[in-house]
Length: 182
Image (spheres, rainbow, N blue to C red):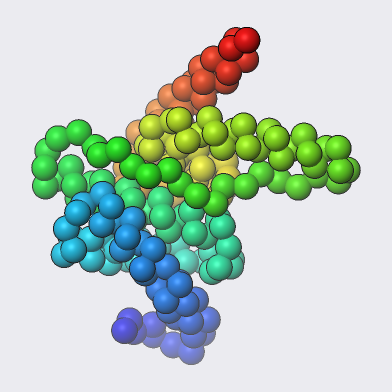
């Protein structure tokens, strides 16, 4: 148990405990899927929760798709970093992220069009490398700044900016492929 230092932090402690109880098993399975080692997977989950603790104020609801994708991205990136530091070889192929949704629209016709667009975008994102997909989702779906993303993923801000630039270019290329297919 963590020591929080005062009664004003009771809500944060409660939120953190709720996050832990809600996502610890999912995070362990994600980490284990990358690492295939129980001890390293536990280490990845622990490191992820320490990183999440630094950004606890940005989590408004514990049980929502954005929070789920946030914790999955954090633990997956930590697991990949642990894997790379242990093995010094290429990153494993990863399972696709779940839970991405687009925005709602006022009219039924617009809603259908938005849903089709969101599904098409989600399909394109699934075809992207994990490193690109995760920065795009953190930036545009979750609304984090490049500095916050750099801190969460353990990267430099310049590296995050470059990944976002490359990810947008890759997304544009994938979209062009989709449009040009008869």
